[in-house]
Length: 163
Image (cartoon, rainbow, N blue to C red):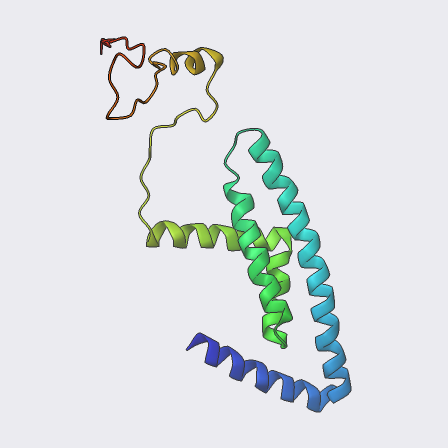
């Protein structure tokens, strides 16, 4: 329903604007906003990618930057769609100041729609001591064929104490 309403509104706006400024100017304006929007989306996307990499290198979850990346991607889709309404919303998503407001609304919507649970944090990077402890209970061995006899191989029976 939103798609149909948006398409009809864009078509109406394109016809009205083209009646005022002419078809060639309307087409030129549409192409100009598409090119400018794609350049700006690319620039903001790279900036957001640098932020994501920086936060991850500091072992922080880049929540806001990931939401920004999603909004920038969505704005790129809006900007390549011909029309004035989608261009206005698309450009407003690319401006960092207004994107922060959209991000807050998106976060509020996601929290209302989805259930989140906290999981105990675990270190993703084990230290040297825990790395050694994981190998303390390893026993080297060989797999013997089922039809073999102990005379053919040196067999040692070992019992492992499970503490």
